[in-house]
Each structure stands twice: as structure tokens, then as C-alpha cells.
Length: 283
Image (cartoon, rainbow, N blue to C red; front, side):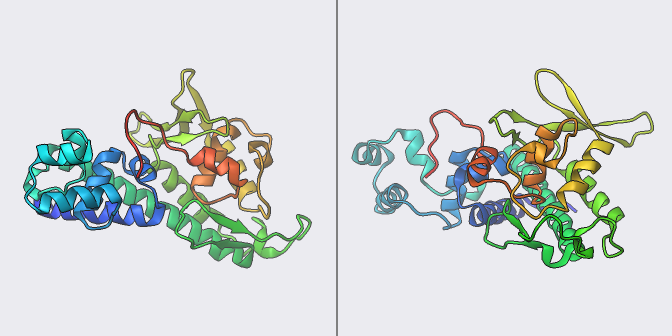
């Protein structure tokens, strides 16, 4: 089903607003949707979902029939900056750009839905020992803080209440959805991964890390780390806390992004920090 440009634009607006309300930061929305910060801010202004002193000043002057040159003189902003604080006109959004941004929004929703399903499966199968925190931050999650020696059925992958196959399938769907997503290691190095297609045309269950030296993560290693992650009750302060597993330094931020583990607050700030872009301010 194809949507008209106007419908695509309205969907773009609603997705950007939704992401901003959840993440609370233009910079994080930029990272999630792969849309520039300036464009994100302009879209939020168009949807009446963003306010700042400068945005209010520029729009008030523009509404009072001040020219762009006059606004530049009053605010000391460049011409491009003045326009960046003004709302879009639907027909001014280039169709080819709109189509690309619409695809980015579709991928964002696909990732969000995949994570939601994975978390719901783990919450259902682990009961009170796996409690999601609905605080508006999709990265946050808590596990019960009882002692590691507790062998409650709800907390064991050997439990009949735990649907291992469903959990593994949901994890795989998340991994597929997050291909080329910008992750960061605990040392701040940005990376992404892809899943190659085999001779039969199906995806191979092997993640190829996009770094200078190509590395791969096997499905067996991923599952081993995942089975350890769903048993967690405490904050995992380092990748090795998931186990002595090949590629665990990459699985650690991936699992945190999926809401499978908790990490220290300072480490979360490193994992969450999006790539910096020149001459762009958040607010």
C-alpha cells in the first residue's frame, strides 16, 4: 500500500514526535532515526512539539511579517539558522528525501517493536525477577536484586515456565532489525553489524562487526551470552560479567540496547552517546 506525500509527511512528523517524547533529546532522535538534528528540530517545531527561547523568538518575528534579513539582524543568526527554526511547509519537503526519511522511520518502528516483543517474552517467562521499568527511556530495565544463589524457577532457563525457543526467536528478530544501527562499546568505539546472506538466500546466523578489522559473532556465542543475560539479577559492570565469550565486548552494548541487562549509570552514558556532528547543537 502506497501513501501520498502528505500522508508520508504526517507519518514522519508523528514518528519524530514519538521518538522525541520517549528519548527526550534531539541528539538521540538523530541517532535513532538517522535524521540530522537540524531537521529533527524543524520537524518538531512544525508539529508544535518543541519550544525554546530562540525558536519562539524567530517564529514570533516571522509571524509579525519581519523579513528573513531583519530576523537575521535581530537574532544574529545566519540565514540557514533562521530557516531551521521555522516550520516546514508540506510541499517544501523534497519527495526523494521524504521517502528516505520515511524508510528510516519504518526501521525505527520495526526495531522498537522487536525490542518490545523480546522484553515481553522475558518478563512473562521470568515473572517478578525480570521487571521492565516504564520511565520513558527504552534502554532502562531492572532485574530483581536477590542473591545469585536463588534458584527460583522463574529465573532459570531450565524452568518449564521459560520458553527458550520463543526467546531465541525474538532475540534473532531484534538482531535482524538492528543491522547497521550505531552501537558503542564501553570504551566509546562506534560499531555496527550486518548479517550476510547464504547461498540459499537466507540470512546466516552470524553477525559481522563493521570495524577496521572485520570480526564475526557466531550464533552459539550469542545464545550463550543471552542465556546468561536473562538470568541476571544485578547490574553488570563489565562485558565479561556476561561470561568469557568471544565477542562479548560487542554483545554487551547490544544486549543493553535490547533492554536485557542493566549497566552502571556512567557506562550507560557512554553506550548511549550518539556520534557527534559538526556545528550542530542539541537544544
